[in-house]
Amino acid sequence: MNCFIGVDIGTTGIRAGIYNESFQLLGDGNGKSILIREDDGGIYQKPEDIYTETVMAIREALGKSGISPESVVAFSFDGQMAGIMGIDEHWNPVTPYDSWLDTRCSSELDYIMATARDKIIEKSGIVPSINHAPKILWWKNKRPEVFERISRFIQPAAWIAGLFCGLKAEKAFIDWTYLHFSGLADIEELSWSNELLEIFEIPLDKLPVIVSPFSVIGTLNREMAGVLGVPSGIPVAAGCGDAASCFLGAGGVKEGVAIDIGGTASVFSLTTNRMVVDYSALVYSSRAVSTNLWHVMSYINGGGQNLEWFVNNFARGTEFDRLNKEAEKLNPGCDGLVFVPHLEGRAYPPQPDMRGTWVGFTRKHNLYHFYRSILEGIGFEYLLYKNRIVELIPGIKVSEVRAVGGGAKSDLWNKIKADILGVEYKTINREDIAILGQAFIGAKVSGVIEDVQEVVEKVIRIEKLFSPDGENHRLYTGLFEKYLKSLDLSLI
Image (cartoon, rainbow, N blue to C red; front, side, top):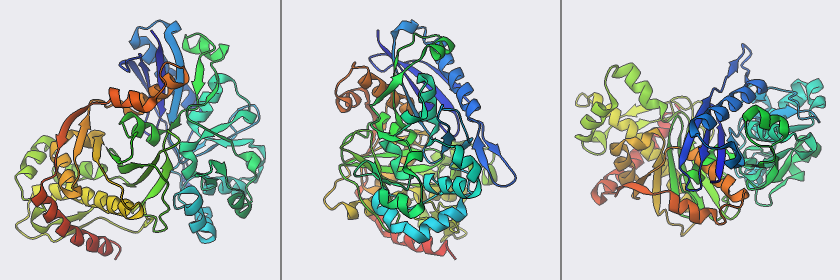
């Protein structure tokens, strides 16, 4: 039996999974993502903590799986995408992991936006934000003595993979699913942009080599094999970013398939066969794991957290099942009540001063109207993304939306979003989508499978289907205009 180990090194935690050739999860393990917050606004993770927690998660997964260690034929890692860490020529950390939550590079971001906003959108597919380029400039400008010691900037998943293989900095890598967050790459050409590097005076030799997620970057060395309790020489794949792994694990492997990740952030992504350039910055393009596919997407920062916030502040002690049952009895459109879900600023386009808003409430509205309006508000924002993508890619058809994450457990919410978007919503048979995506990559690099798309479509099955109601869709389409006006009000 061949088995694959997939590891997700995320912001909220680390998870490892052991899979067999049928992609059954045989055992999983968990580690912590330990964020350190400092008074100056710094938010970071210690590399040694990332290493310790990753090893712990893998060993727990191996212990639960009951497999023979000799059956492991591949490792693959995904991880958080928008932050950076610096290493020296021997792969030793020079900096902590500078988290995407750390906003100390705001002045560098302002400079980048003023200097090359549209050029970065054109080349890298996304408006500049708190990601690689401004962070690299921050280390260059604010910590020049540390910057000089940095041989390469990489991400945590790549650092762990290289550590497992005993790599040196000359072999540092970044797979192409991260490139849109770099602000320094030409993601269509899969290369670093000399033009952008020259504008910001960033040395090319500080950046890693761009590779495919399916690249074998090395093999497990003897030291790490002893730590983990598996044989040395196991191939280690480059892997991909955590969002890309979720899209792969959810079955977003064919043009027209959209993925709705209903988690802390509310993510809407459409799989396409081309990059789009959106100078309005409402949506952005990222490379999919497969070289011929893209994900055009956007998200609501803290979208899923809105529900938890509402319950904690206005419905404490009320179960979500009760809220859903009562909200389901209400008329679609909440009798004119509209909610804007950007409580802590809007991510795309960047509007940090936008705030949440309820518009149109009267004395006839009760607790359940307000709850349902949150579900609908996120659906309206998704419709905005969908309409923009269709506008940018004339003729593209959104064939289905696959709902994953905690939000997918709400039948009411799935039905609301199906009605608002006018597209079939589907839930799938898997919740382990991030580490499952890495298992698919591991199976490919070990030669166990040939066609990833074909295997993904066999493994991922539809469990529930929510078809849009034509009358409800027409009602929501009319109310959508009120939502657009409410967005303007949220900036006042």
